[in-house]
Length: 76
Image (cartoon, rainbow, N blue to C red; front, side, top):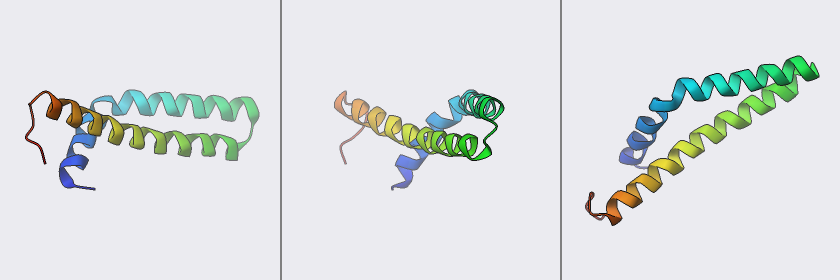
């Protein structure tokens, strides 16, 4: 993974970090309170954290491709 790709991902993820984390935590707590199963809540929390990072990487990649196709970035 290149440093430019990581920078774009962190830039995008930083903008939505707190809202995303609050949503993930709220749902994980709701699962814990409803099911009383710590493992289920922890598994959900872990899966959603991984999904959030993968989603931020994907969004950064898509943004870079769109900007390149519109002439905002030089081709690699």
